[in-house]
Amino acid sequence: MLFDRSTHSVKLTDAGGALLPEARATLAAAQAAKDAVDEARGGLRGTVVLGTMQAQGMRAVDLAGILAAFRAEHPAVEVEIRHVGGSSEMADEVRGGRLDLAFVALPGGLGTLEELFEVLTWRQLRLHGKPVALLDVAGFWEPLLAFLDARVADGAAPGQGKIGMALQTLTPDVAASLGIDRATKGAVITDIVTGSPAEQAGLRPGDVIVEIDRRPVGSADEAVSALHGTSKSSGHLLRVRGPNGTRFVTVK
Image (cartoon, rainbow, N blue to C red; front, side):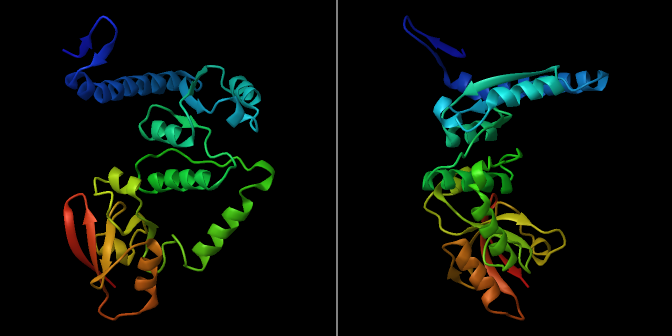
């Protein structure tokens, strides 16, 4: 039985809840196959599911104009619009494959920045593969992008560095998404350079560094300082948590 029906409501049973993600994946695969066939026959076809905020959150975007221009260029593509909450909720919908793309992270306060970096971290961890774009209203994001470029250039923040890996401070939400206790402290690997010492040591995106040379790591900054601040001919001993448990890795 997939549904539990009463006189006032219909709810999924445990079996129905277990089947739902698989059913969605099957429908998505069938739609993707149909779209591929349609595209091969001539022209871009299919359906794009777009997430948007309510009117107040979208006031800086000419959504009607964007959709009209897209329609003129791709008349065989149907755009389905959904309102699913704020940036965090829509990011979760994109990550779960229920939205193809969404308007998120419009200029705002510190909460907006937190949501933006969370979505970027999920992408680096390959929890979703969707592009992330910023609507640069009146140059709002330019100072932040310049700051990030400078920090990567000087090796002080999530760049790959000489060891060949990018790091991000582990947050409770990212820890939960990786199947790790939310209270875990450390630095999560978000990217690995091909052929780098990190790759040769067997490290991979999603691994969490919790110790370096027997000392606890509480953030990406601490990990970068430990790895680049002191040169050791024997390399650095890393205690790493991954999907298969905890292991020790030496990186030179």
